[in-house]
Image (cartoon, rainbow, N blue to C red; front, side, top):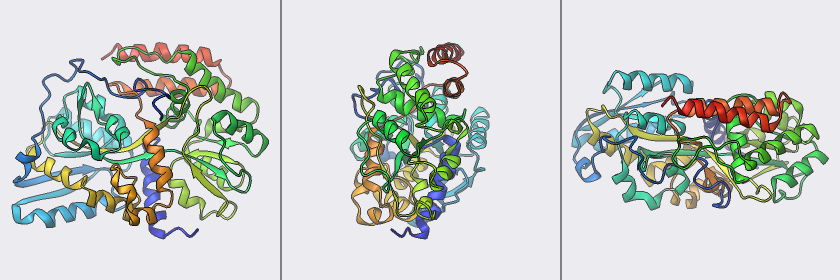
Length: 441
């Protein structure tokens, strides 16, 4: 199959975003307790300002500043221009303020402005893992009323990424979920369970994934742990529950995969790109990676036309689960034009613009209807698999101290995969470190 150049270019953008966030099940997989928001308010965000309702925003005027990472795809530049064209007669306009590509630097830019109570940015293009941290600081407006009015339009899993403390803080804009890549010249169909995948991998050329000590390993581990029925935090988000039989089972499974040769020992050093290169060079039968690798694989001589993608299989004795990546649109609590900001968000998340993001820039849609569009299906030949992957995916643990939670996971999981400690010892240490982090907030 020939992949259009725009698909390749846009998917490279997805790659760039994915690398910095390591991104992006059945209800019988990991439940809401793995990464979902608290079902009821805990009081952590009491006193948070509410965003205006859409009726109040209809006649908004003035200017809005939309702050985002470097828009290398051009999607945000185009839609901002369209917004200005559509609403100039109303006296409403927007400008795009681009931050550096690095997710860490983007977060720093956000934090600096909010700590200074700056109104420079009305809207932020926020990583999905930032919601709880920033909402707990009361840096975001509560968009619950707006979301409730449009709730049925969004894929439910994407709404988890804007949920915290029984409220919604933002609107989903672009999502992402991992795929299982497989060599069609070596495997006729994808096995139904992860266990069977690893068994087949051991017979063939193995499986590669992101096993280095960074955010990507947190994602890869949680995909299996949630599918096995594991959790990271308690329902109220105040206590670690990572040291559980289900999570030990998932980590033991990963460690055994390296010991028995289903996965190469080098996988403990792999991020997205080394895994992709190993697969494209013909050194692996299976690969866990994000959608961006699809177009690139079809440019690689050794695997072009010889691979396909599939949503994740079940974990034996558990269910299915993936982890969401992506970005949301959030309104700063210090915005000087919240009405204009909400109006722009309404435009940027409309069916028209989300379709454009998908068909022209290959950004994974957050709206159910977009996946049924003929133009989107043409631009995303794996759209059916992508929607299924997004639907079964879960958000990462929702916590104001998520960076520390994630570090505790990936450092100790990597130690277990490297043989430096047992899975039991690794999760016991992670449990202690997560509880210490939770106690600081």
